[in-house]
Amino acid sequence: MTERPRPFVLQVAYDQDELLGARWWHEGLKVKPVALGDWGSGGDDSRRAALKVLACLGVGAVFAGVAFRGCSSDEDALTSSYPSLAATDAQRQYGLLYAANGASFTWTDSVPNDANGAPMVRDSLQLLAAELQPKVARWQPFYVPTLASSLRAPDATELRATIPFVSSAAMQKAFLRGQALAELIAFAEAPAKWLIVVDLPGPLSVAFAAGLAKHATPVCMFGNWPHPRGVVPAHMTLSALLFHRPQLTASPHEGELAAALVLDRDRLHPYDNASDRFDNRYVVQLPSASALRDIHRVLYVVPGDGQAGSEQELDDLNETFVSWRSAGIAVRMVGAADFLPDNEFAGQGEEASHKQVAGGGGHAPRHYWGGTRATHGWWLHSLGSRPPDGAPMQAPTRRMAGDEYEPRRRSIGTSGFSNVGRAPWPAGSRGSTSGGSWGRSSGGGSS
Amino acid sequence: MSDHFFGIQVALQTPPDGRLRQSLARLLRQQSQNLDVLGQSRLFAALSRTLHKAVDVTTLGFWDLQQNGRGEYDEWVRGLEDDAAERWVADAEAAQLDHVLVTTLFLLPSRGRSAHLVGERCDLPENSWMRRSTFRTLFTTVGELDFASVRGAAVYVTPGNEALAFSRRELEGDGYEYLLPLR
Image (cartoon, rainbow over all chains, first blue to last red):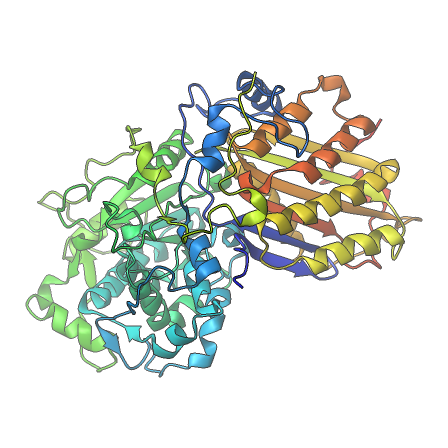
């Protein structure tokens, strides 16, 4: 008999003199976006305003306690219009390898030791989700443990037995780029007012955040489980987390630290409902502007590799970035590809950096924004950081990623979100779970 | 994409180690785990029943409903959980240490059933917001939420140890100005 899905994931629990309590997050909850009109347009978010808007939505005609008697189409859309269930719910209930059809995980770029040169201790893998909890309390509410927690799944025995560390040349480069960006924080007057949003393909985001970790608390926001046929190669990100675990978990507990929200850019990877793939995509929910009242600057890290769409935020971030900007937070974009090895070492950069990160003892060139100390110094200065006295400064002579970026509200294909991360019900089981809420059909019209 | 924040905080006058404190503690300790929708519904239904029994000893309270409420939710969570990092120091000047704070917070998708339910129940004239009968209604509502349309939920008891308690003086002082007497 299969277990019911437990979509309310316990995020934190306290049982101590000061506090007894717990907090849950409903993983995979999907709400069909609807036309909101003036709703959420900012301004008055007060209790009275909320009541007013709810009243406009026709509240008062449709409820009778828990005995839900029927409702309008908006309401039905929430629970009954999806002939599917959330992918993570499906995996929790029916197994990590649900709908894998015999496929198994495959990894590339596996290495025998982690970033500190230590071998895998498989008994410790189930601790990963807890270890990645941000050390700085104010960022803990935003940590998404879903991916790391997949190692604790009851049927993850094989995954735990086989998952390797991975470290590719691209990851090593991303690590050095993260270190270069860390200088920005190191020389900033008030590092705690900085928030970095790292939005690269999963393993690269992990490596970049590891490079930043001495100066920015990593806050992982990976909201899916790995799957052998996954649209998002989350298993690679999981392996990258294991490789960089020593650096990510050694981030300082206190002091003047920035924070780095670590995202997987592949989370909204294009997917055409191909039946041989498992849709483990997801939408990320960033902190609201009011939760970032003490943040003055946001730096959004994108690949910056000239690919189409690489110089705008992903769709699920647009609304939040616009709200941050409206709240007076400066949101700047930086391309990871613009951090280059010092020109002095041109030609040996990749090989040298590979040696250092892999523990080979070779010389790794420092990376600089624009490729020189002078452009790097100029960049730090332009962002309000204070490089050491005497540091050279020179504006770049070429166009850099994000030069013209600022968050602007744009039309988002909302139907794309409503279909993100859905898995089919197993044959014959639809509607049999979750206290009868999933897939419950409308009881009729409403007034 | 916006969510509502719905939160209630009440101060209950109940002696340390009393039946009410033990009941709250037992309830929370039993349910500190991943839960399905039904499990979550049961937990908050039980909490609702417990709070109902405590309406007459509810001395101070606060509740709020806000649209675009993610920030408010995060702020409440952070504020309450930060308390866990500070060592409990009892009010040395108060004669009676007999109050406990119970807080429950929700993040509700704006067009979900739960948001509608809360909107309906909270649509009250402002002069009734602090009435005991209003809190009775709010407690009922907590027990009737449809957790298929709840994104985030939290419940806290402060202090956590059943043998410790606030004084009323503390809860009427600095940092708790938003708590108002029930009428």
